[in-house]
Image (cartoon, rainbow, N blue to C red; front, side, top):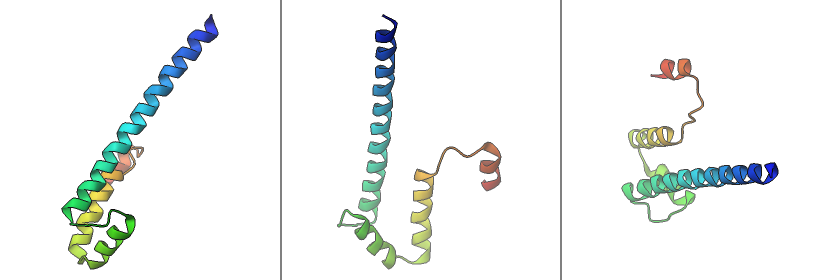
Length: 86
């Protein structure tokens, strides 16, 4: 009896974990599509993005780089480090 309850609880936890991972992947995919649309990149691949970056001036590149850093930064930093960066 105890094993079946434990298995059920672990199964439910696994389903929640997978759902959160899928949600995060969808958000990131939506972000990347937005970048491609915003900069008019027709080839939806890393190579298309690299070609566009080569065409950019430094100001545009720094803006794009900031967007990527904001979206993909790790949220594991400790508070002191985040305060020092701000």
